[in-house]
Length: 155
Picture 1 (cartoon, rainbow, N blue to C red):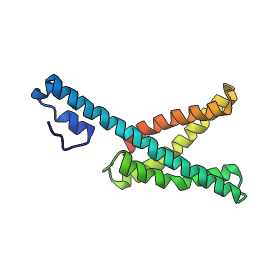
Picture 2 (cartoon, one colour; picture 1 turned 30 degrees about the vertical axis):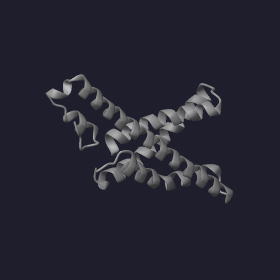
Picture 3 (spheres, rainbow, N blue to C red; picture 1 turned 180 degrees about the vertical axis):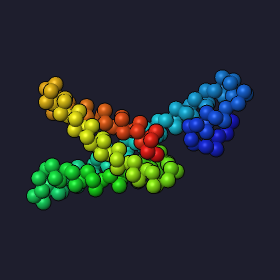
């Protein structure tokens, strides 16, 4: 049973009555699982590279005497194109027109920034968690929401 498409829907849609045999079904489920894992792993790698560039750039800007908040904001904005290109071409392998994705991705990043800020504030200021816990919670929740939004709405 060969599948030309790496698209999950293409794999599922190509099932026929003979594919209900256990060996065919196991192979198909293994392909679906591998597809999902590849996408999630690449999402983490692209996101990690973007985050690393952000930290390096924000630190460099701060070393030029910019206040931390200003350095952070500038670095964040400058790293959005890197994340867009990485997720569009490597994570999701999107064919959606740029006219949609190039608007939706920065808008999503703006929402993600607001979400991370709100989670950090609630966690650290209201719930009195240590800052590192607040940062980790914000990163995990925001990254998960961003993955789902990118997968289903942006790309």
